Length: 287
Image (cartoon, rainbow, N blue to C red):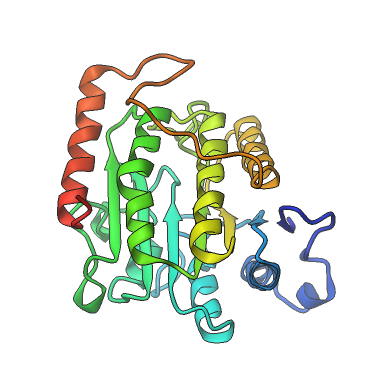
């Protein structure tokens, strides 16, 4: 486990460095996240945290679903309180709904949470539907995109084009945090979506370009799910490669809902994805 910032030659921190030596094992993931985040903000350089346990299911009430503490939520609050960056955007692309993150920021307009997940993923009672958009002052600042089973590379990139990018442009965050779960990979045993290794590299490229445009390159990826070790390793490598190439790789436009280079997504599935996108855009006034 190490914190690493793309473009740097050495790890920023590990659980064995002095600042982590006094942390109990279950607190090291949070400690690592915060120390890496500080370097991301200081250097305006993207970062990656390889964390276990993950965090996005943990709520204000306590642990849930392999998650003890919500690492990304802690990072958002830390940067607001200690690093003078008031507006934070969180993108969660784990196959499961990040119920803990959505619950923590449910009433908070200073944190935009975008959660792209499979529609029947766990903990549905915690508000994973399109109409679950935050409450009170936080109304409209939670954007849930529940994709139908089998949606893949082209579908999630269309979600990017039609929902994620315009929502981010409107919000104008000071920092982007990514709950980077890789269990939507087509080879993952938990998968109900069909992302490919290159899906994650493309998402990372687009996120880096977005961070450069909106928040001086400040972006941190935090590992969430991923249970096929080979697929996980390949996908994380694709993300890190995209971060290292961030100054040379332009965003790739998506021309149609089609799985280029692989099997076309069935027309019925593409129609379902388009219907979800249209509804989410309507709810959130994105077009």
